[in-house]
Length: 560
Ligand SMILES: *Cc1c(COP(=O)(O)O)cnc(C)c1O
Image 1: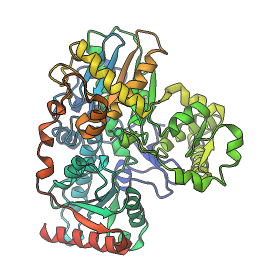
Image 2: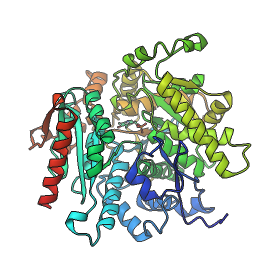
Image 3: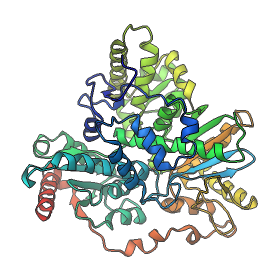
Image 4: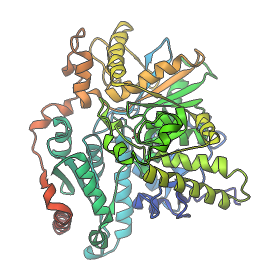
């Protein structure tokens, strides 16, 4: 095999497709066999990466990393640089994802990922994905008559958190329309306003008279609908899109360099990353960074009370419903319906409220490859074995609501990960504890690369959002398990103003607490701005929503 790997190809985790290009996997999102796309090889870092990248900007790091996953024959270097520049120019912080030290004594740092346009970490990926979609489509459409142009129709459902990041990622993009459904009246006023005040012609907010599940059912029905798939190229922006994982790898490196440049770091100390986890997308990017060669001792998964991942790492069973031991396992089939009915628990960290984590399938493939592929004679054979194994597990998840793995798989998973679960009560307590302890320290210190600690009050109190608090609670417990010299970098995934009711619940009555002092100017008066939203009745059904989408896309093309 050539040692000069200029070309990176992709395969499906269920073994149904191989040798796909980056462009294929970005535009398709999901593989035809229902699997997720992963790179055929995880690239290794160049030998001199640490000295060479040490003082790189966020954009320069992104370029180095993306170049290992995207062949220059697909996206020439100059174009890739421009895509990256454009994607992160919308971020308010100069360092894009600054790191601040929250607890000097325990070496706990916070990687602030909420300085993008919608104040949540999903911007890091979706700003890039939007530009990538546009880049591929414009290139495909070059020199074509208007009527022959390819057009992408992005469809998604949101319970509030991700819709705005998708909308801000795609607003105004050429040859792309975006339709985001939310349950009418069931998202918070700020979140609703963040979505519906975007007035670009290609952005369509649909307020569905129903629940979030009704919205998701519409999305699923549309993707399965022959009629619309004949005339429209549908695309999804949910966290299964490979480009989103790729974009998130950058900040693990950025945070690592920020830490080792800071005076508080002693050479050789261990580094752990702690990640508030829902769909396993954010932490999966950390896994790729680690496998590439980033010296992270462990990745700590922090779940809320929807703890399927934590149960997997504790018991080796991946099950929708918490079951205890062997006896319950037999009853699972009969209980299948009940397990479903029980569903997701609503917590104070809603962006992590999931029943199953879709990106976990990608990790399963690598675990199966490592454990079951070990004895196979060729790489092709190893991949085949991994694909079959994943297919079997996912099939059991669908038909039996869960599956168990052998000890060897759990051991392999535990080599890179630890897990923890944080209750709502602990989340509130952590917001309060951090608020009080940071004031007494005169506030967290921005690290060497001069972060803009975005959520400090004037007295230096640090206000965590509930998702970031889940991470910090798990980080402080992890501190107890490792040598005192270990540094923890915990990911802050949202600005507290996005989840103000949970924050108020935690901090009401605390000294000097006044939400206004941390409210970003972008949120002030947002709810009174002009809105564009279409109400959709559930009873209009698939045909109703299909014709609405077809008509809107047509109108957009006519106006273009
Ligand atoms: C999406 C989200 C998460 C969870 O990220 P995953 O990639 O799904 O694990 C955590 N916090 C916030 C604020 C989010 O929006």
